Length: 461
Ligand SMILES: [Zn+2]
Image 1: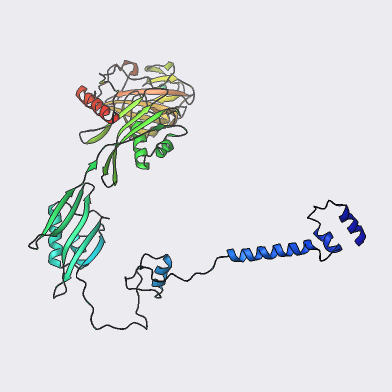
Image 2: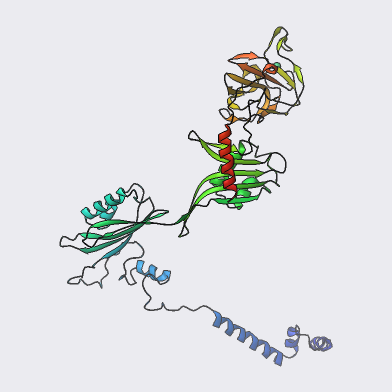
């Protein structure tokens, strides 16, 4: 058998390294075997050298600046405590602790305090070791400046040496009262507590965010840098003019201007959304300016013309009139009765829009009328839209002329999909086609000039 292997081996090219088994069978102590064993040993030696070793802790590390291990050892009471505890854990004295005869009192003490909500500055200072009289005097001085610390403010406090009764005076108190104000309480030459204000430069240039809608408006706003609250503000502002779900296209571009204050130190505080713009690839561009009117925040479109009174109501659905206002034989009840509105023939699911600006006073089921929306437009004028398949306007919400409120259906007492549309004046049905004049609030020309000026200022940053 061995000669067979040997011949096989001999017939192979001499460079064949995978013939170890064959070589072993033939020449158990060949030079190749030793070379293999030596390589293996060298590898083992190398791995051993690379393995991690346990190093002793470096001695003399400054307390608090060492690695976590030092702090952990302090917690376990095996480390130095001369710098005070870093863990907040209660420490008990060990067997090696020895009492000392007297300890020198530190001349002054520097503390960093955090003002929490519901706290009182005087009380906080007193808790921190300040003499009561000083603590309340300091609090009164700060209050007189209208610069009490806000919750979360960090205060640095320096207390003087304790007097005979162990009370410490306030040497210095310093904190950032506001984004643009630093407050320092110190002592005058004759030892009286006094306040020093330092105004900090604050840049109030608003923040401007622009971007393309792409896959979705909300996430595009977020990735452009808007916070969730700012994105929600923007959607709400433009939501009154466009249907964000269906009318905003991927190619549309948005623009936000947000109030912002940036302190010289780099701290930033964001304010409200001031401007909401939308450049639309299809449809009218939006250029909305935040404008408070009589204390209420309104979004006014810069492009809105100070429209005069619009004549007539908008047709609520695209479709022919199949039944007009007046007496007729009811198709289901089979007797002559007054038709209190106008029927529009329109396919199932056709969109129904508000005939005029107003407030949705009903959005729900109304017996034979099926799903019904009623909108009050002011001046005793109400429009009503019945037999809907679906309602989208929320009850109590404000809708604009032309805004989608629901879809055509055949709910309630109806023979097929159509819109039964009524107009009521002071509660009495009137012929919708006869309503030619609607009193509505017009936009003041002076106000529009102010809105346009503000829009220019915000956009031309
Ligand atoms: Zn009808």
